[in-house]
Length: 141
Image (cartoon, rainbow, N blue to C red; front, side, top):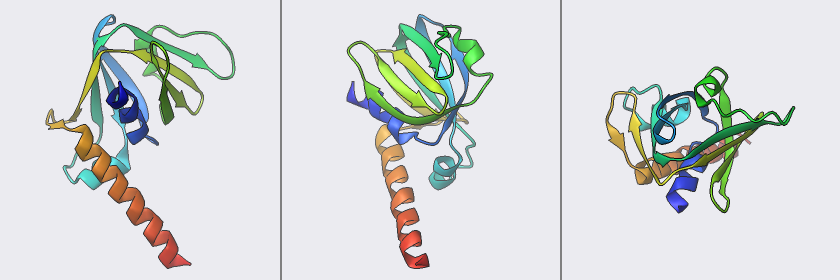
């Protein structure tokens, strides 16, 4: 479950812009995350997070409590990812304008060209990017 939660924290500042697949079943989430894709130096513009055995997808906007369960409509607006945490039976992804709730068994990631990318690679690239960003900030002072 740790990877299932942590992938969303690695994708912090990315935006969920589309869903495809079946629910319940296997669902794919399109995440635009420019800085991470550029740091991967693959020419990719976005990543797909493939949720295997997905049994729950729901979104609750902060401005009202109207639960949205039609996952395909969620791609109509960008859901910017802030953080994620594991709950008893699901993962709560805090977005800028609401909470996305997901339950699934496992996840894999791939670049927009279909090439798989590991969680370890994404984590390493993300860490290097933010370490470099922090260092640039110190050098600017």
